[in-house]
Length: 435
RNA sequence: AGAGAGGUGUCCGAGUGGUUGAAGGAGCACGCCUGGAAAGCGUGUAUACCCGCAAGGGUAUCGAGGGUUCGAAUCCCUUCCUCUCUGCCA
Image (cartoon, rainbow, N blue to C red):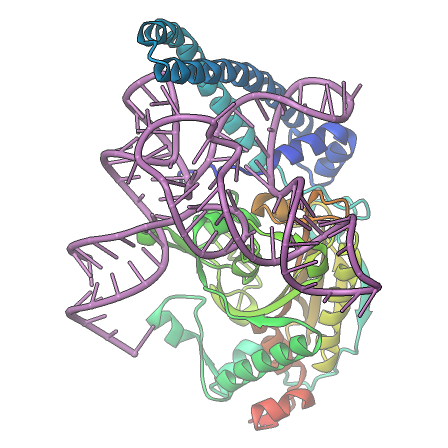
C-alpha cells in the first residue's frame, strides 16, 4: 500500500524525547522485543541532526533571498529599473541552492517520519517484560465460576438449540464471521448495548454516534495506519476504512484540537459495530462468537491531563469491572506484558471473563493509556498553566465488547432446560429466560 | 451526479503581485479609570520548525498539494471541503 506522509506532525517532540531519554526509550523498546532497537534509535537521531543542519542552510539562504526581493520591490517603486534588473540576475544562484537544500530537507524529513512511524509507544515502567500472553501479570480474579450440569454445552451449540444466532445465514449473506442474531439473540444484543450505554452515562460519559467509515488521516491519528492496514476493511473507491473499534472515530474527534486545562477530563462513550479482517488469526479457539469479522462494542474514551491519566486509567479499569460484576460474570484482570501490548499503548489492562462450558478465559475488554503517543499523531494539545502547548493524554477501553459477553452469559447461565438471563438485563430484555 | 458561489487568524470581515503574520471590528487577557460594575482609554492576543544560556532572531503557514515570478493570500493547474440550484435517494 502507498504510505502517505501526513504533514506537520509534531513528531519532532518525539525525537527530542528520544534524545533526552535514550536509555529509557531503548529499554522500553526492548521490553517489547522490538528488533534492532538501538540502531534504529541512532538512525532517528542521525536523520534529525541532518534535518536540522539542512534546515539551517535553507533558512539562511531563504532569508537572503527575501531581503533581495524586498529590495527589488523598493527599487522598482523608485523607478530604478536598471538596478533592479541587476540584482535580479544575482538571485538565480541563490535560488538553485535553496532548491537543493529544500529537496534534501524534505528527503531527510520523510525518511525520519517513516522510521518514527515504525516505533511503538514506550511501555510504562511497571509493564512486565515478556514475549506473549503467557507473560501477562495477573492482577486479580473475581466472581465464582458456576458449577454447570453434566450436559453443559458451549455457546455455539446453545445458539443452535434455541435458534438465536445463525452463522450459516451469515455465511450466505456475507461470509464466515458475520453472524445473524435472531429473536431473543437479537434482543439480548440490543439489551446489552442499552445497558452499557446507560451505565456509561451514569458514570459521566457523553454519548456520541460517530461515523464507522473513517479516512486515512484518522487511521494515522490513532495508530492503525501505517502499521495495521491489513487488519481493516477498505472502501477503496473512496479511500475509507471500516473502523476496527470506535476508538478511531471518537479519538479523532480531537485531532488538531487545542484544549484548555479546564476542558479536562473529556469523557465520551460510543456504541458502534466493529470490523476486523483478522487476517491470519484464524485457528483453534475461534469457534462461535469467539472471533468475528463484525461485532458490536461500546467503547469509552477519555482525553486527560498528563498528570491525571494513570489515575483515570485505574478509574476506567474499575468501571469496566463494575459492569462485569453487575452481569455476574467471573472475570480476571491482567496487566499486559511488553510483548503482548498494542503498538500505541503505554499500559494496558485486559479483562477476561470465564466462559464455563468452553472452560476458557475470553478477553472482553482492553483498557489502555496511550499517554501522548496518539496525541502526538493527532496534534491534540492543550495550553498548560504556563501558557505553553503540551500534548494531552488519550485513553480508552471496551465497555464492553458484546460477542464474548454473550458467549459467557449463555454458557454460564445454562441449565438442563435453557438459559436464565442476568437480573440486571431483564428490564432491558423483557424476558428472563431463553428456552 | 450536473451547474454556480465560496474557503483568510478564536469569531466576523477587508484584501487581486512588493515591509501583509496579514486592515478594521468583536471576543479574550492585563493595566488605567470607578465605591463596585458598565462604558471609555492603553497594551497584548496563532502554530510548527531552526539558531540562541537568554534576550532575541530566522523560515514556513491565508483549505491542501504543485506551478509561474526576483517576489503570491492575491495569477495558473490539481485536489478536498462548504453553500445554493437541478437530479437521485434512506
